[in-house]
Amino acid sequence: MGKDKGTMEEQTLEAYLGTYDEIYQSAVKIRWRNKTIDILIIVISSLTSGTLWALIGTSYKTVAAWSAAILSTTLTIITLLQKNLDLGRKYEELIGLYGRVGQDIASLRTSKPNDENQALAWFKLKRFREEMIRILR
Image (cartoon, rainbow, N blue to C red; front, top):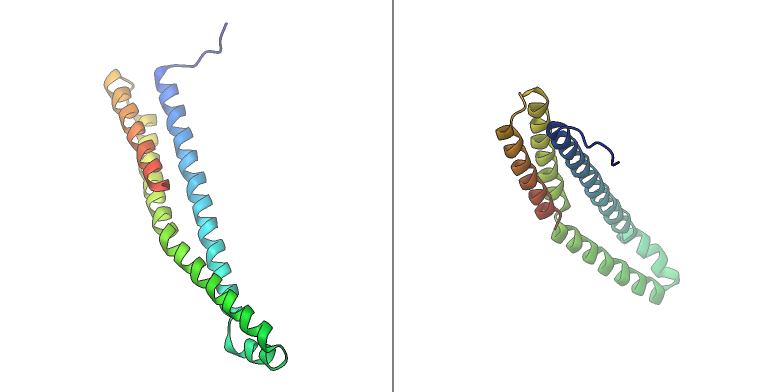
């Protein structure tokens, strides 16, 4: 015999809680990526400061010139990548979605179970998941 899956209400709540956690985990990953890119930009920006290269350039002119050019180009690429990924916007949208799913979970826990509520809950859950996928693209 198989494991009992519980009532329809329990299944709905379990699906919502899974989506809720998935949205949270996605938001955490995006926030971490955004912070990592920010730190990388700060570090490379510091390395490309004029004073550092003036000191290095007095002894190693060719190496300093090539190193500065490579770091500057890398900084430009990373900055463009950050702008293109728009991780800050994605994070904010995921947090908004996370809040709406949380409100629905609270509503599910306090509402009287009936077929109409369950059908609406599954429809909304499907829409929440679709929105999460859209945000993460």
